Length: 588
Image (cartoon, rainbow, N blue to C red):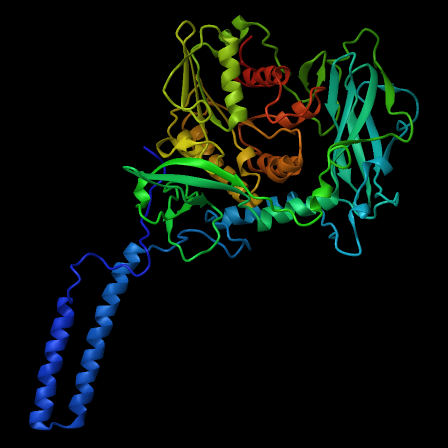
């Protein structure tokens, strides 16, 4: 059963049933009028009776009109029930928040706020924006002097300039930083601090012995971020969605979204009755709302203004390396002769982990176990039920397990591979793995009977020590105002809290977004800036819960492989090690 219900919206001016004849109330009114007129003429009663008569007629007419309005209200429901728009100056619809959630949302919005950037209006041009070719970074000397040691913190200062070579006076650029050693297949992400004056600090842990080379990348100039911010505010419908409505041979495909532009056309309301998550379609002209059978992605509408595309040029200002003004690398020595350098890397840093010999190692308290054989993976998941919910980056994990475990066989449920639901069973080891995509907005073609919200699915999970729940939702919501993402995560969090209350031993794993290969199109639809901001919101919302985070962002950023929407197998293998460590942390 689908999680959404349709409330009909009939065309304006319709009347409820009837054969076109005069309503009985009107016949009675007309009859009373004739009788009263005759009495007035025959008896010449005082004018006050005429006034009384007119008053009675007016009241009867008013009561009849109110009855019609009540019927029309049933045919034409309020277009946006249960949603607030005052707090969000946009044409999008938002799930209503409790006072506590509203206060929390305000705090999250403040914590993820990005510096404002002066607009590129005449006389300012693209040449006044950040230019990686004229910018540089420098490695600061070690605090206290001497040689670099494993466990130290390496600090780098980045100085941004525009295309004229003039130092920038404000911040807001999107920078990535990585420390790596190709020979050791080692890498770690740096933490970037914006000083809001055109300079940035980057802090790296030094977790391995040997050479460590700094790499700084300009992902977006601050002027491009101003464009991305405007797109989500003014053009959240630049990727459209459609509903397929069908009755016999009659088919209609109206637009659907949480951000439908106001028109006089009535809407079909497919708001989820349990979570309150909004979703609407323009009502088909000749079909009812109940005739919807599929959800699909529509087209992309270019929303950039004149010359704004110059802010997203590959090889110029889109994911371009910034050169060092001095030596780009340092040599790191071991603190103690004979000590394992990979295990000694416990430093105070924002990084969650690092690669060494191609293997992801945690910088936290819990070391990551390595499940390098089929038997090790099967032993960890024996007698387990693993439920996976989310987008295609979660589906990638489902398919990885099928490829790794030879006895894990997928059953053909005659559904699309993209959306699911999908089911795989390993009868030898008693393993069951499921996958289902999240609810709209989603850029897949999905039968409406299979559109499910993660929160509702979690409420249907019994849970327990042999149950693992994995979810991730991010890529399909990045063109919308961030409040829509925050509120979706709050809804999911509520379901997680309920699950852990009834079954505390359930293992819950959440995945954040990862950086991607960016083009002009990708920047407008799935920019790394959108992902980084949403990741901060996700971390804040699930903070303090017994939920295990797979930091896909750092695990992709720190790796030598290129950034892709769907990370390559070596990265996926390491992500699976993190998941299995969470599942089997009690096993020896």
